Image 1 (cartoon, rainbow over the protein chains, first blue to last red):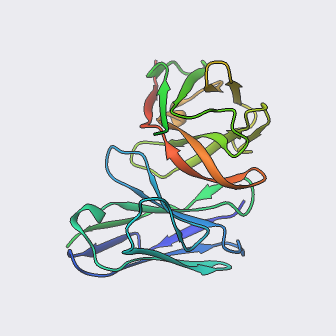
Image 2: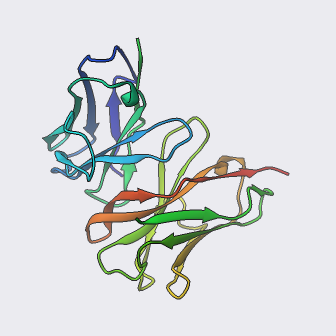
Length: 107
Length: 123
């Protein structure tokens, strides 16, 4: 099973600041990584698929990069609605797995 | 607009079987472009993939749950369902159904989600 680790666990930032979230896989997963955003009481929402492709309707301030085992989600300028938990997920091999999440909260 | 809605009991006794159904509207479950899946999230914790199903009935289960899980599809009702047997308190979670896209074989991402339903295992 591929294990995903995310860092930091919590990121405390202010609106307008840049957020950089990391996801590392226990082995190479090519570009088969997605990022999701989850707000309290809501289902996760797909933001980025295959490492760098924005899903339908996702604002351009969200971008993804990386390949192999190291990946990054960048939010260029935080909006108030971006404070949430972010999960990465791999689809390189079965079983599909998620990282433990990074919480982006208000500083 | 595609919508998914989970339904089923919110309380299940230990050792019994958890049963949930996902009703899909705004799209056909019989599309060959997608899989359909179940994902769960214990309160305050992270996400765990349970399993996938194709409209033909082909299934893929997380090995950690494989001995207890059954997922099946009813294309006539545009629904798919989850059964998890011999539940314990560790199975208490919000259970989400999802449409799975961007697939290579069985490995996919979840691009549409239901709102989730909390199932508590308690006597």
